[in-house]
Length: 144
Image (cartoon, rainbow, N blue to C red; front, side):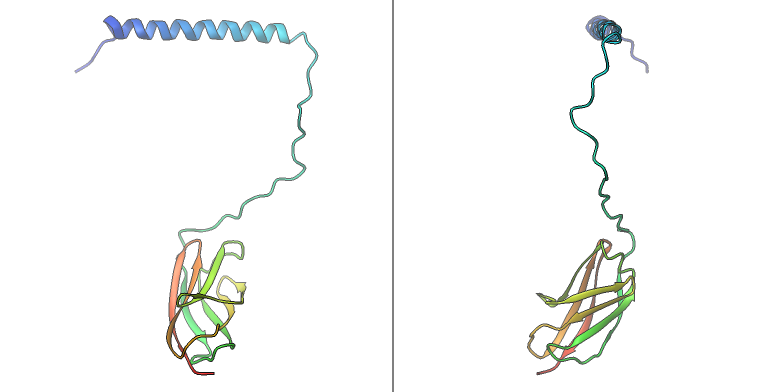
């Protein structure tokens, strides 16, 4: 079933079209008048360099495959191995349970280093957070 533009609806379209034509003629006239005027310089200069935001692959879900040493004591440094950790600019965090790592170092897309915070002995999930998601690995924390 087709619908034709008639009555009030057709008059509304005609008014819109007429208004657009008037605006186009007005803009064309303004451009013609201003073309004889000398060009003006922009009030602000463009930046000399533009900082680009990192491009993070949100489709690559990270996966921790190994944490060494295991078991570990608070204060020890661990190596976290896996895949899809992303770029340094897109890597976000390492945590032990609900405690963030005091120190961690992004080494590569497959390797991180972190210092175990002062935690009670027991099993604790080590989590990493990237632009593509998170991954966990259960680690045994021993007494100091």
